[in-house]
Image 1: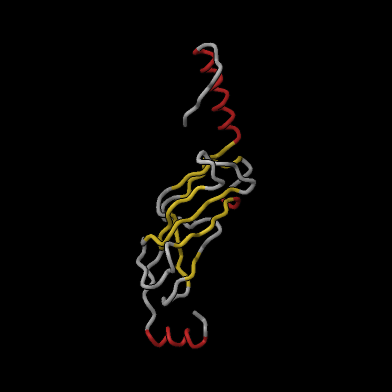
Image 2: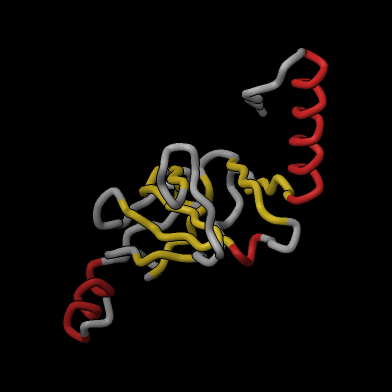
Length: 144
């Protein structure tokens, strides 16, 4: 964490203002970590084409942290999935499948001026390609 105090008349005044700022942050916010491999808040599965299963569980590709108000928790995090392209089987576990934008209910801006942060996501399970008969049946019945 980096603080910038402008307008202090001395080093001791700058130190006191920094201390007040850091105390305010620690009393008002919690740093919430979503670890690599953990499910993404509010998104459990995404659609996969031609797979033995019709959905693919996705997870955070790397550990990501957000500052949340003390009253907030992971249930206040919303996620929007942005696939690299259509997700078509076969897919290997840990394969990058896109990005997710995380926003917080009652939002606050991020330093880059955006309302959310974007991070990579990966497959949380290997999904093999369905055999030709299953794929044909899904095409005929439109249950892809």
